[in-house]
Amino acid sequence: MTRAIGEAEKAAFAQRGFVVLESIIDAADLAMLRRECAVFVERTDAWLAKRGTDVFGITHRGKRYFISNRYRDSEDLPKFVFGETMRAVTTAFLGETVYLFNEQWVVKGAEQGMKFAWHQDSGYVQFRDPGNRHKPYLTCWCALDDMSAPNGTISVMPHDRVGSRDTVFPHRREEGTNDLVGYEGDDPGELIEMPAGSVAVFSSTSLHRSGPNTTDRWRRVYLTQYSAERIHTTHGDLWGKGVPFVENGELVYDPATDVAESELLKTAGRPARSRPSSRRRFS
Ligand SMILES: O=C(O)CCC(=O)C(=O)O
Image 1: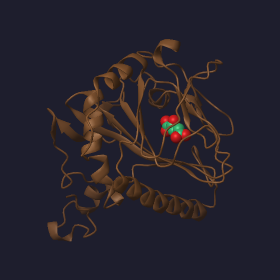
Image 2: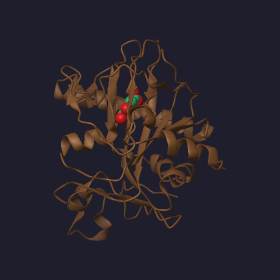
Image 3: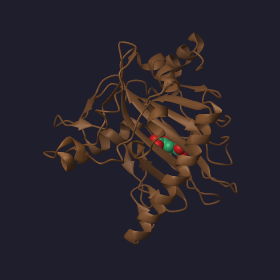
């Protein structure tokens, strides 16, 4: 059973914009996430090889992977993304209504795992859609390995040190890495060291960065992001997933209706039984 999030943890988040929930992911989920991670990294390598490139956006083969929005391709991932642990975590910090906004793997290769520059997650939204206004959303940075400075853990900047709570800073694109950079000062922030199975929870306005992985092992993270309301672009289109997860404190996630737009288009107009048989079950 998932442990409850305590008042001290909620207060720390409210004041600083982040908190660490140590060892909150159980052993079965941790093993599942590690298994799935290997599958998606392998698929990404194959996809990059097919395209004849080592770099795609901020993904650099063997060094750093950002693999987004694949949970629907997995039998097991939705059970975690919309499961009890994430319900406890997200409702503690967002309130009684929660949507999935985004999910992704962030994996750094052994010895050559690249750093990732200081940024706010909302800075990426505003860089791509200038003028976008949204309530800060929540990132759950789930550690699949013990996290330390040598393997490139994150550092997070407390809100009160830079005034980031309600402010999204301008970001610039960094040559070579394609990272967006939202802070160029010399405050090192707070280094997050924690065991595998822990979750660092932070606001989308919290500045954070990660260091290079200098160890001989991969550094693996599964990162899920949730919002208290659907987020839209300045043109009114849905931004991110917007999948209902919790409403008035009740679990409302329905795998039967959680179908990608592209899948809907493929199946539109066909008899129901011709829908792909690979549609994932959620129990
Ligand atoms: O895991 C990391 O190295 C950092 C990931 C991150 O900051 C992000 O995806 O926004």
